[in-house]
Image (cartoon, rainbow, N blue to C red; front, side):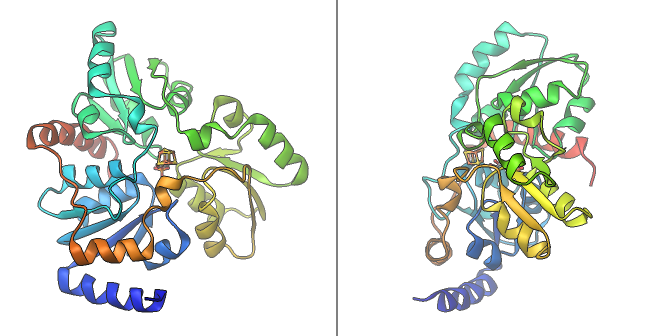
Length: 304
Ligand code: 13P
Ligand code: SF4
């Protein structure tokens, strides 16, 4: 089946099943173009609640589909490839978190949305890269245990007076972007504005002119009067950046910043997911209810 035929069939099935396709900004370009909504983790979580759909196909990774189910269990949430995980999310388990909570009994646990439902269930509140600052400010406690991303946690610690304990987790894709990559890119493009994702190392963020979530980077670049940008995040971001601002130039700081898990949803696997309603993502009810509290607190801390 060619892509046009897949797109035609997808649109029939979406109508028939009252389904939508949500895609992350790191999804394949052709998947983004076929999606009903493309966004960052926060936008996609909110859409899972707000959209009047019976079925959501998630062109992203497991924790995103899981969050959609936690927030909207009455909807059928489909992940085209059940193996599309997030290595950073796997760097903290509920058991290890429970042990750490004993060490820091007075700390509020803030978990990045890139985490399992079981970890969310053991946390006080979730955050995304788009709202971490607001979430931290809304917390009463002066001490925070931040899991699993040490880079986002470190960045957040620079925005607050609270004491932030960091977990030793990271995104392998962002972690391999080095300060040397940034300096080399800056010497090639001395006039470019450097926009970075907070999952990057602190020594990379030190050089950034703007630090935003994926949607924040796209919004900033589209509104900016500058013409050239260095982009410190996953390379598929170039698609939307160029689409929104074809007259501007965008250069990835690292050509190796590629998340294979985010590419697992391809047009044929999305069609298969919708046709066969696989793989359905669910969470045991006891964990879902507790995890939902953490996600709800995040959504409340950041009014629409
Ligand atoms: P955001 O799109 O929320 O910035 O997240 C980036 C990311 O790495 C998602 O896995
Ligand atoms: Fe996980 Fe990093 Fe891939 Fe995002 S880009 S899904 S944080 S591995």
